[in-house]
Length: 192
Image (cartoon, rainbow, N blue to C red; front, side, top):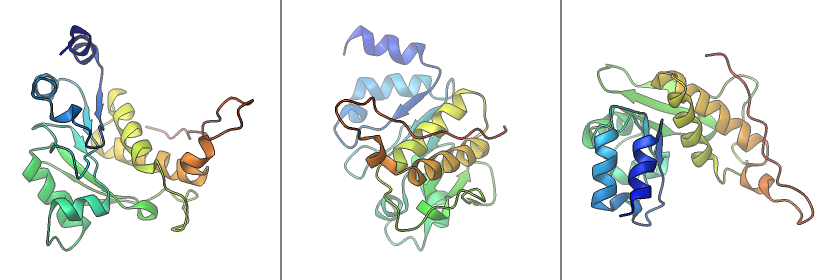
């Protein structure tokens, strides 16, 4: 592994792991570097069914409802999946994303699973294009954690950011004619 990878992970204020099952997150040296940084910086893991489980001590893992059901067979819903995966993966927290319904969050050391709904005024249609919403959620949570938010606030901000992303047309809105610059969706400001 290159010195650049070591330097990038060592210098990071936060890390988002999302390799779509391509193998980078399974590399033993990458995992060792990430495990060494866990607890020092926010580390958000967006798991993929073909990828490895999150490293121990990840700040937040962010499976969607379908992924959570696959990771925990026989689980009767996202509430239990969030709790089960937090324990199984030794993560600090797991937020199971639920599309238009927000997310279910379980944090280690808490008794209850929290439902984080979409903010009022930002409700999304269940028929909306959601391509990229999970990526937007994970990136927003990682950014909020890097800026000092606690996990619950980071997930609230991530739900709002993903909802706004979907309401703005999701990934299809990022496509633009060749003679125009890409247009990114507006990211709302929410008080911390």
